[in-house]
Image 1 (spheres, rainbow, N blue to C red):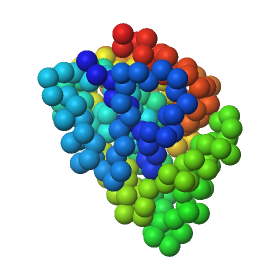
Image 2: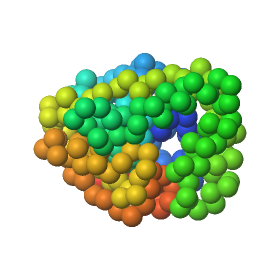
Image 3: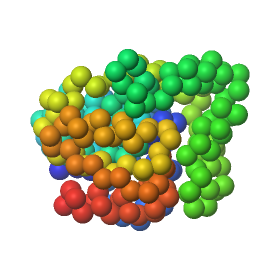
Length: 224
């Protein structure tokens, strides 16, 4: 089996450079922030083997989607910042306001740096070396087309109805103070997937940054 890490919206491998033990793991780049690029990358890497997938935020959404469409190619999912739908809708209040994403889509073409600095800052409160991490994210921030593609994925992807069909091992470690993907969204997944185990710990959306090494070690140990 192979370990694959799927980063969140507008981020990439550089965000995980501080993880000391990624031997045998691959962090996907997803330069376009799109499902199609992630789908192709996972298809290529799953040839002849099952994947252990770590997904964060948009990466958690994509990991779930891949698992729903390719259960026989997935050994397990380890999710943080987990969600099966990013925005609220009738009967589902465990997401962000749809207007928030629409405002970002409207503003990114003309105010890309301001929008993304505000977005990254929104989950940085408890991150050690916050300023350094934030500048790293801004330096490596994708271009406008990629950002708009990622925001569209967050706005349109809805996996809620498919959750009860999942039967692979899923572990969710969620920050109890996550303001980007609220804890209720992780609970929604766990309540509908019999094989899912949910743990809340103190922290926010950038939980793996707030507690360096913790989630990495738990993922590696869980999939050994």
